[in-house]
Amino acid sequence: MRPILMKGHERPLTFLKYNREGDLLFSCAKDHNPTVWFADNGERLGTYRGHNGAVWSCDISRDSSRLITGSADQTSKLWDVQTGTQLYTFNFDSPARSVDFAVGEKLAAITTDPFMGLPSAIHVKRITRDPDDQTGESVYILKGPQGRINRAIWGPLNKTIISAGEDAVIRIWDSETGKLLKESDKEDGHKKPMTSLSKSTDGSHFITGSLDKSAKLWDSRTLTLIKTYVTERPVNAVAMSPLLDHVVLGGGQDASAVTTTDHRAGKFEAKFYGKIFQEEIGGVKGHFGPINALAFNPDGKSFSSGGEDGYVRLHHFDHDYFSIKI
Image 1 (cartoon, helix red, strand yellow):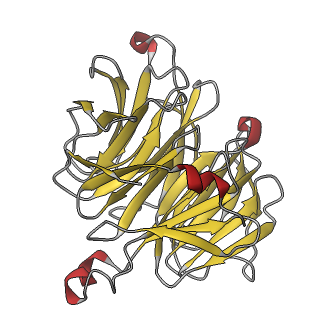
Image 2 (cartoon, rainbow, N blue to C red; image 1 turned 30 degrees about the vertical axis):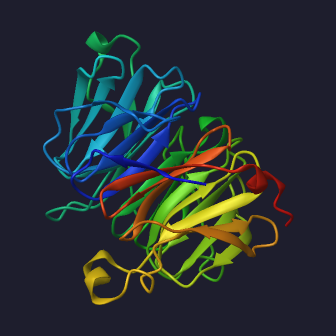
């Protein structure tokens, strides 16, 4: 399969997200401008201008009308997808890291980094249908984890919030009361900071990637460890195929050490694993730096990767991919 190379960001990619139909791909990077692309041919549709720092993540509403972004400029912004206008800005006292809409888009979970003595936190905001009614008040703020929370997502039926971060503990919070319900087991859990967290299409399980060179699959309700995928590089990004039982892991050595080795030795390929039997089934090479972001198209027929090299590579699978015998 030939990748489509999407040039548009001047700085390393941080996050990729498809809309529900899978016709648009949203990319965030450290260059302040989230970008939207056509997902079939990689053509750039437009950018969302207004942030003043690296944009760490984004989420798109179910009907593809609203975009929410979280940035190092200590704000999270709501955008009109079609026109690119800013609808609202949430201001924080520290950089905003992860953003995630609840099902129904009435709520959004936004995580903020530890900064100048402030601990990291998960802020839950009400999102109004009419942008004019929008306020910046938090429904509640969850605190507790040490270090940065790299990702926080909504659990099944919006009943919980699942968070993962630098202290290598996965936490499940009650989204009604803000109480901590479960923490991942020290034995089963990751040994180093978690970089990424991505849930299955039906929300029943999720996968985490970590700098301890592994990815782990967990049950969303019970937080039971289901599978572990061991690789030989730090994992920066994880994604699960919505169609087949495949998991894709991306990573590579730390960006600061990239120039010290040959790009083949840096292990910058996206590795595919069988979800059930945990064995490697293939790899997709191409990036000249660590892979920071991965996303599967909701139809499972293509995937994209974003690297430290500033490129987004869009891969449409060949026919033989769908008949890989595991």
